[in-house]
Amino acid sequence: MNLFEKWDKIIEGGLQRLVRSSLGPWTCDAFLESYALALDDIQSRAQTIRGRKIFPYKRIVLKFLLADPGQVPLLAPILVQKRQLSSEVRRRLEEAGCEPPSTLRVDATAIMSTDPNLAGRPYEISYDSELPSQSPLTIRVLRGEAERPTYCFAERIINIGRCAEVHDEANRLVRRNHAVLLDLDRGPNSTVSREHAHISFDLDTGWYRLYDDASRFGTQIYRDGRIIDVPQGPTGGAWLRTGDEVHLGQARLAVDFSES
Image (tube, rainbow, N blue to C red; front, side, top):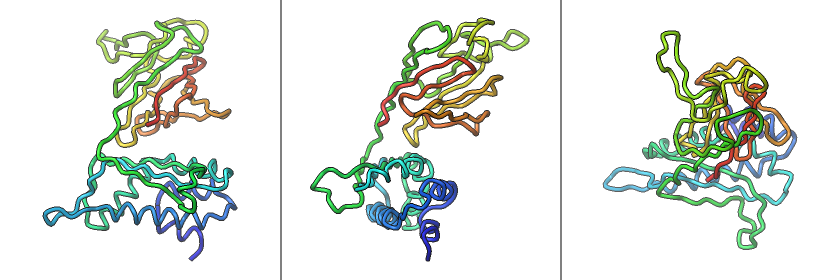
């Protein structure tokens, strides 16, 4: 069985493509074995209570311990796919006859192993019976004119656009924006749609996701020197990381939150 046949047995769908494009020629047999062992470990935590198998945890934090610092950025685009990782863990639990909790969340990272007590261990797993609370989201206006220079939100959905309220042709209210850029027909504000974008807190992953609401000039994320285009529509979107710069047309915002 070759490298990618092994991976196909461990995880399916979009993550396969990420592995193929991200790892390249790097020999990742050890990682594949570590991932398989971690899934076995998680599956073994299922408990039988009154004749019924349950998984008593709501959050799993999986850390791959690496000796080579060059491997960390190679694994980052794979492990950031929290929803796919959660789906794979759910599948393994269901195969064991266990019904996973509906709110199960899986966080996975790759880090350098510096703790001598963890020497030789390929991964570390912690299990929590409760989910962490939603982290407040801070938005700072970097370019463009807004009602306030800084916003702080704890809402699940945060609408962003030009002007505070949006009305239809019959003057009926159709939307309220939370982060409001002024309704100006000049400068960066003129490239921001009234219903430009929104940010949604995802309960499954504990992260924020940015969506473009069919804006005229588009939405992008600037991160680590590269531009990420945000697809339009409710089925698109892109995950946000703290410190990201969000571009709404020519306007720019910075987002900060705790990545719990």
